[in-house]
Image 1 (cartoon, helix red, strand yellow):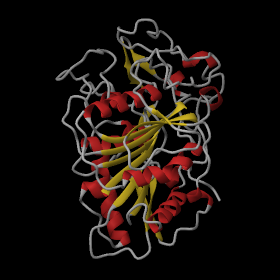
Image 2 (image 1 turned 120 degrees about the horizontal axis):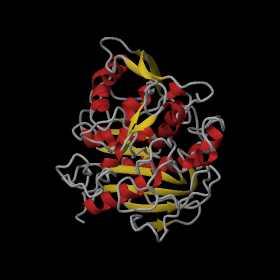
Image 3 (image 1 turned 180 degrees about the horizontal axis):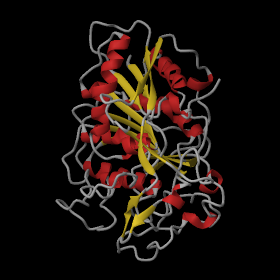
Image 4 (image 1 turned 180 degrees about the vertical axis):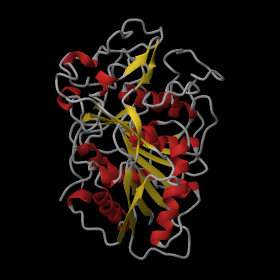
Length: 433
């Protein structure tokens, strides 16, 4: 039996040939690594020079931005009825929900979407990387073909990107005895089954077990395949890393109506009964779906979310992409509204969102050295988001996992049952900071 996300991201050096990415490439060239109060500063103090991701310490005294967190005993999990910041131990033991997993008893319906004049996101986008730099993720190959605009390392040019068609699979799980006389809650997740990384049917089985135990309410589960490729210049990156309501709108117009038609059911329009989930860039999309469309989604679950500047094409109205959800654009660190580089969540009224997310202590750090913009530290982005959510009084839980890499399989398997239970628990009113 395979387990959901039973893989871990390799180091940058392992992910590509040495001809494409030198081991020293984790320190971006021509980067500001010495002047913290000047634009585009990058803290490289944790780099070892080996090519591996730095190991972050949430108690590091040199970084006052890391909010206080509760250290948990090894193999202990955060309580499902509490909010705040928690630190997992180094062991990530498979919980009973996975050890005793059974085939889901409900129906699974699958259908394929393809780009067309009426599909949305038409035409799609693909990036051509020259041999030998092409990889499954593409990020390593981008070192040769991508450069940042002179004077603005946050603006990446990708000449290898061009229009192309896309296809993707949508998988829908309908639990047994699902009523058809009322609208139904649902969980929708990106990076669905057709990209080979996130086998959604294991997730269906685990969710099925949690529903039987009444730890989460009965719901429909929808896995939407990515549009193809990864990062800047790809369809996956275009959809997931763009900070707007565009992806949520596409799902609303082109996915959910087909789910209802093919499964002969009605999905809830109540945002409290809609949850969105993702991994890495699809985790950033989960945040964007709820933040930009709170009328559609109130519940967010994400692993290693790319709350960094992965947005492409560059948007001068939001030059820091996902980084600006929590922090100002690094080109003008003191930016305040109405400056286009100002952080979004700190400046906005409290939204009715419930947010659970995780990062690993060895999460990503500058996989694209040609973009030394000070906004590509996945761990710091997660910590900054936790600080902002706490300051605003959000209903959230942030998990920092030790001994965990980017989209770390053992960590996901360890935490996902409790994360879903936390996410779907009865609404807790926001607290006043």
